[in-house]
Length: 176
Image (cartoon, rainbow, N blue to C red; front, side, top):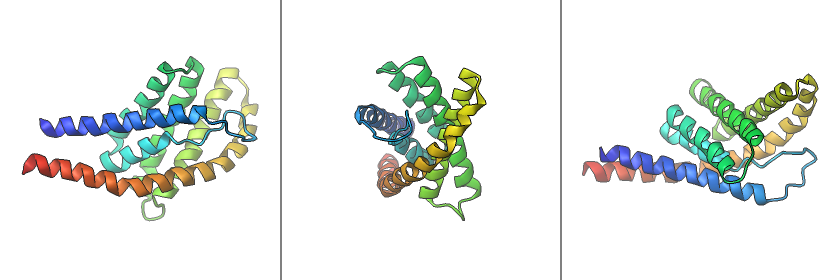
């Protein structure tokens, strides 16, 4: 029973970290050539959850974060973009992590997740305005994904071992 309480505590913490990063990121004026482009800092929480706890828990964090972010000051359209990108990127990162882990490090998984995130958002945009020309924007976003995915992956990679150690220590304290 207590083990699930600690797990819930960690998942709540990761969701809050993602939410804080989301809010913080929205305050940063990003001088990109691509309107709407972001650094993707909140995806650090999803990537960490995926590596430490697995896909089901990563989906929980990846769904709660955009919903809570919208409640703190977003719009319904921003929820559609954020939620679609978050869900698709989490699934793609899991697939790469599970089936191609020989070829991709956590940083590579993050970059592919960033690419998937942008592809999902462009797809939602194209569907909303019924215009496939939105895909012209995808190469620009994909180029930016390389840098943002790299940064997110590096930060998550450094943080992962600390989080895993903390989770393991909590588990040992429960057993001992």
